[in-house]
Structure formats: structure tokens, C-alpha cells
Image 1 (cartoon, rainbow, N blue to C red):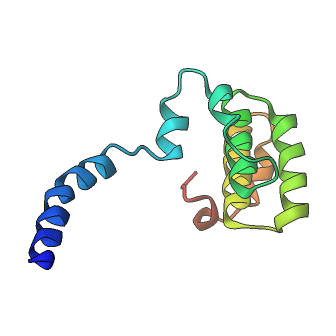
Image 2 (tube, helix red, strand yellow; image 1 turned 60 degrees about the vertical axis):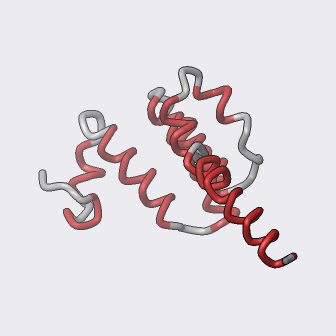
Length: 116
């Protein structure tokens, strides 16, 4: 009898639990959809990989190329050359192509994922 009662209780909660999981929005969506991204960036723990990535991404979106380089330097010093660091560097090369075309000309097409 106890097992049946437990199973009934468990199965009655499953729809509630699954609907709660469907409403969870990850940080990527919070960042992308935020009207004020600087406020959302305050949720990140300083010094983490996510902190460096999203702060560098925001700086790029704002055109703060010097800030991006500063963040990359700290990021690489702490975590080494990661795929996300390369992603931000490749984005920087593409975003600054008009000012510095030679930097991107030296990158292989498969590295930047584009054909120029």
C-alpha cells in the first residue's frame, strides 16, 4: 500500500517538475536577450572562464577593442589558450578587418570559418 501511495505521489509531481524545467532560461539567453547586458554581466563570478568570455564578447559588441585585448591577456594567463579565446580572437580579427586587413589575411580560411 505504501509503495502504491508513493508511486501515485511521484507520478502526480512529474508534470509539475517537467514544466518547471521547460521554463529555465540559461545564461546564454539571459545575456543575448538582456536590454542591459552590463547588468546581466554582474551575475558572473570574476575570474571564471564564463566571466572572461562574456565580458570580452560584450566589449566586442560595444567596439571596445582595447578592453577585449586586456581581457584576453588576463584570460590566457589564467586558463591558457582555449577554444573560446580563439573564438574571441577570430571575431576580433573579423571585426577589425577594415582597420587591420593583414591580421586576417594570415589566418587560414578553415580557422576563421569564412571564405574571403
